[in-house]
Image (cartoon, rainbow, N blue to C red; front, side, top):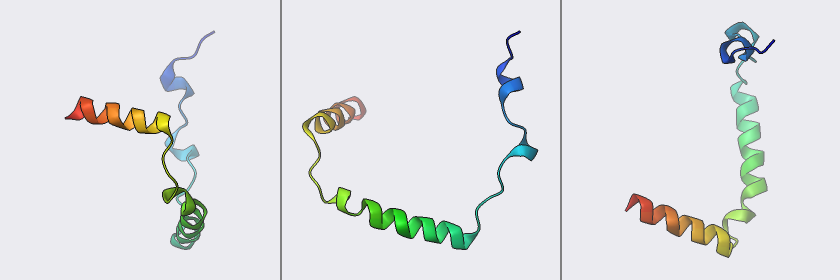
Length: 59
């Protein structure tokens, strides 16, 4: 038997509790330091072409 989309979605009571402010701050700090180097690297040609296409569709 196939289930509908509403039958497969988790109930609100089963959702994970929100993270505390301290945990969010810790994660944010570590993610920023992890990805800081990526922000200074050049973008690849493929990504650059995709960005250019996005600019044309919005412009």
